Image (cartoon, rainbow, N blue to C red; front, side):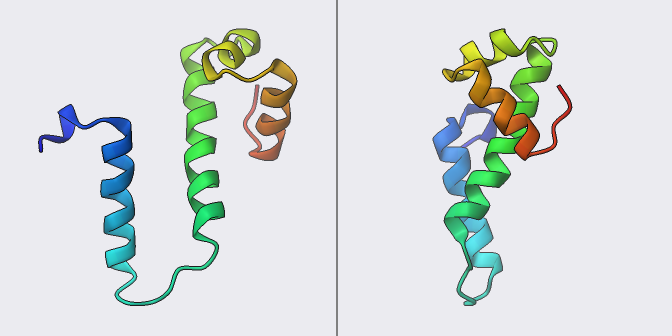
Length: 80
């Protein structure tokens, strides 16, 4: 499938399959936490940038409240 036409879900599956294959038989550690943090940080940063750093609008795009967004920005050390 052309990667330009991949859904977000398909892109995640492709990346995970590649990651697991690259481990060459080694068992991953804390895979859930690793995936969540590596996806959440760029998600927050990208949406915030797209919203011209307007936290209220970014929170609305993400479907979370502004307080939660601010907490996550601090957690991932993303400058508001």
